[in-house]
Length: 280
Length: 354
Image (cartoon, rainbow over all chains, first blue to last red):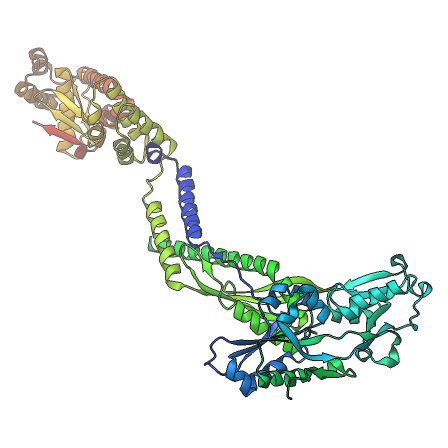
């Protein structure tokens, strides 16, 4: 390389810098890390182990629509002798009900599903081939609620009101019932403005902060003395706890009912019934 | 060289580790940003977000992100994990992170109508052996290359190099010649210029150039051929000037000073005549010159004439710059008012072959 032999000190310096630069790049190239795609699981479940290893991998799965007491329900089931005889693990899930699919029902993914009968029938008309009622409830009352004045089902009253609804079309209390009520009372769409929420916590928070004027709800949810309420219906269908038809062991069914009784405060004032064939 | 190796290794390790960690945290952040909000929203849809729910969430997320798979050609990061610290202000405030092994990552997302922030901590474990091995090897290679770079040349050096190269001398040889001649004083440049011009004229074979330049800077007198060899160049002088030149050389070597006082115009010098006659008789001087010396001794005028002839011949062959060392210097004798002459270069650079 003739130019190498006869180079000037500046060329020599530049070449030196270039050598360091090239090696620096090689070092970078050799060690350049690549983070493999994260494969995140879902985080809407609580699980516990029964301590039994004979029933390798068998899991008792419950699908609820609330996180109230999930830990206690799961732990109580894990502690139950009859459950641990058949299952290694108990998983209580609160997968958003909009994500429940027909294949979840056909494949019997869950042993217990808490949902409304008409919703499951909507997913799979013959869902009763796979699931049957474990615990069901009487109809309950739902109210129009306001912090400012007693709701009146008239166009005048609803004029300019902001109504808080859940965006989930499967929500009976916070979506289906209020829309039905507005329609049957001939209150047209343009009268009020609907504001949609993803979950009940924000809905109630906005209501209490005065960001929305009206919401619907059961009587037990808010202290009655500070809220004006007008009955919307006394005939609302409550969600039912369904159990997989294949899960016939009466001891386990009884354990399930006992564990779900922990949720009693949620159906305060509504009569619960369990399936007649269950002896507990 | 050891110090250069060490410091370059440290620089390489520093750059590569910090860029690797930066890249990992950037990629992790992107992936969390794209996937975590949906997962968190689903998990918190029916949940009031109390401490039990958050603890459950944390244990699920931590189990999920316990080990990030990181691939690189050389594994300098052993493994990384991400810990979920919490949501919003409720997040555990960990001790300040130790750069570059830990980093906090915040993921912003819309939870219903609320703007929430989830806090995560990325921590990585180094793979010390590959880190040291790869970077010290690379640094060693780089340092070896740096230290094997040929020395640089100034523009004058490069001009001569190109000239030598233009004559057909191989680059490496030419480079060696230039380095041997450095520093390029006026005299060294004159030597190179002379060599180049002689090679151009065909008086010197290209292959002999290196040897020529390496020749000691001496003058060699050969009485038998009445020639002098200066810087490897043989110059045959006319007989009579040669013997005068040889006399000066002889006297310069005989006593350290070697000054030769020019005789007075009317009083030739008999002492130098003896020396000259001896040389001329032994090595075939012109009979006419011998006779003249015997009859008249060394005369000032003849001495001056011969010095001038020597000067002309040497300057003609070597050029003034190179010749002047081997020519005469002069000083005035205060007592007589006459001039003293001697060969300029010190006696050790004068070689006399009898």
